[in-house]
Amino acid sequence: MARSYSPEYKSTLAKVSMDESPLVLLEINHPQLTTPILIVNDTLDIASNGKEYLAFPFQCTLPDDFENQLPKATITIGNVSKDIMFWLEESGGGIGATATFTQIMRSRPNQIEWTITMTLFNISATNQEIRAELGFDNLFAKPAILLKYRPSTSAGLF
Image (tube, rainbow, N blue to C red; front, side, top):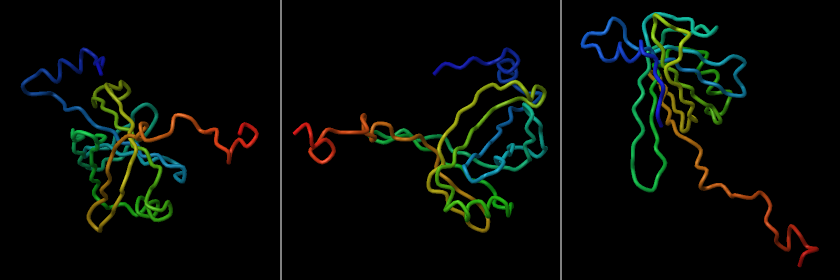
């Protein structure tokens, strides 16, 4: 998928020694969250597009590419927030949560260079970290139609 990056972003990435590095913002949403979890993979907080992102280091591994399965990535967040743990316990492991990754530059925090939203699966937590798989819903495994004409659902046709 082709992305349209700003000229400033392209110029920064092309430099041998960058003046600044791109920042990755993470927004975790869930129906039971009154406000989304907003963190930036940096050591300083940042405001972007009217939202305040807290500095909170996390690691993300890129999706794998195996035949006959959907690509999946993983994310690891340092487990230092009681709010996140409380949400995980109350939501039954965060089922139905989504993660939106957005990349920006600190000098232009309101200009989004790219963004992607993925579903969180298999969330697990220890005293040191929270791990989750990231992926997409398997649309090929879902039925194309909601109602099938069978004797049990449409007796008048048979």
